[in-house]
Length: 215
Image 1 (cartoon, one colour):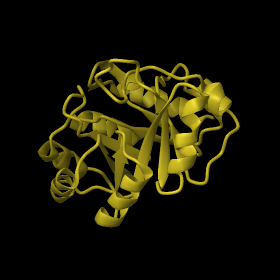
Image 2 (cartoon, one colour):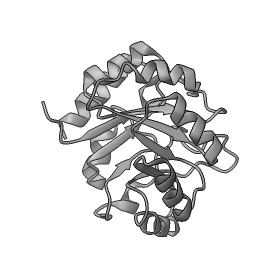
Image 3 (cartoon, helix red, strand yellow):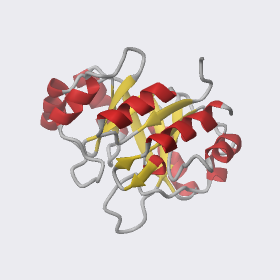
Image 4 (cartoon, one colour):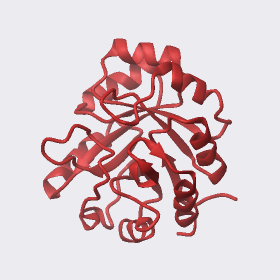
């Protein structure tokens, strides 16, 4: 069945959880290479997982302010389809990464108020896709995956020149409301399908995808 809503399950570390995401119909699977995250996976571990992903499911690397050397090593170790830049990368840096590595780039942007929307406009000029996430609270250790939504009304009815994903505090219980309010056609989830930080729950994965597919 072709799903109208595309879902990315991010922060996968376990073969069984990867299989659950693929079987449930995920369009993207994400591997987190931010060392301070409970979802961190080594390049070696990610390679083993990536080799199990069938054609048609995009393998995405989440990195945070990674330099060229780190990205070089990562791409050499893991067969990837896309890079997700989840740090403070400028539009210029996004363009550099695209040119150097030849992979599509998703730029993640944190939103908490209307003052954050200008960055979306700026980044759509260079990124292949945008990921609109909740801005992390002050003092947070993680740039994303904090399980917090933002005020979806901030982007209700807005459209940009490139595809975009909605992220931030999404769960099987609220994803239908989030899609209805924002008009998002792509959804990213990590902590919302976990039983503990960094531990995915196959039942929650299936419930999330089943709910999203009905929208």
